[in-house]
Length: 273
Image (cartoon, rainbow, N blue to C red; front, side):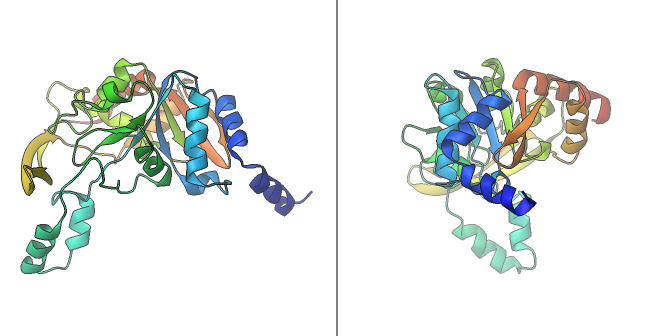
């Protein structure tokens, strides 16, 4: 059979049951917390689309498992790269008008930016819980969801007082489903750990206080994904990463503590403060 025939068979076979089998074959552990970064386009054609993938993740984890996804909104800021790109070329007056029109973050209704269709399905699913950070929120569904998502501090994007800190404590797993290490938010936890005083910067975002939009400013660690691909290449060589396919997507499954501990050591050796 030619390549076209194999592709047709694969498209026809990518059902929810197939995905559950792929996830279990990769080693996704039932009953655990799983932080998922996923690309729907990498998985290929799936009957039922993103809701089928989200359901397959929940099925593979079982009723005792909790799925977690990033649901960040970096555009809810005037200090983010995505905002600066949008206002590039505007006049000072146009920038001021654009900034004044930005809606405040609402954890119940604000859609994520750039997290993908699967993350949005999890965020909007019945019973899901979302952390309250206006720029780097996460959402979770499952019995550990509330504990993982509560008390996400404003001045802690991706550190100890974020869901990542609690996922590390819970000995969670990370699934990179068709995406690379540059998308792996858990590695940023190491940026809070690799030295006693990591570099800080000012962030601004718009939230609701009372019933009115209000801009707030806070200090937090500088987040830099520029070397995460190189870090990931070295992590792949350690033998702690499980590789496989889910649908048509190349995947990695990693214990979060292994990834973060390695990243902390790696950053201490490769970054200057």
